Length: 68
Image (cartoon, rainbow, N blue to C red; front, side, top):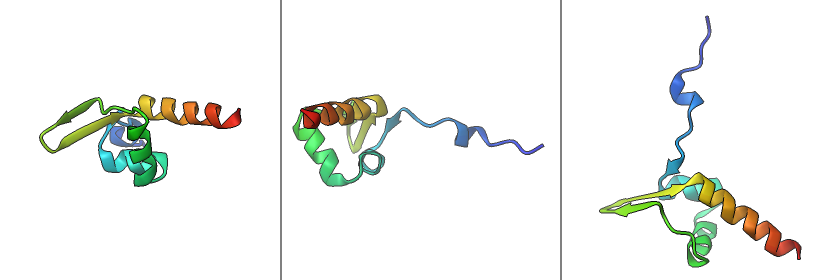
């Protein structure tokens, strides 16, 4: 039987700054989203996590604003 390891099936919902930058298309884009109000879910000593759903929300919000 060829089974996919569980670690490849489950994508973490909270991701670090580097992964968030890759997810949205670059560090500059993530920085603009933060400037526009995106808040990390968790920010502590050298640890920052963003919620993928928040990133998706900001992407969709930008698409709507740019379509008008």
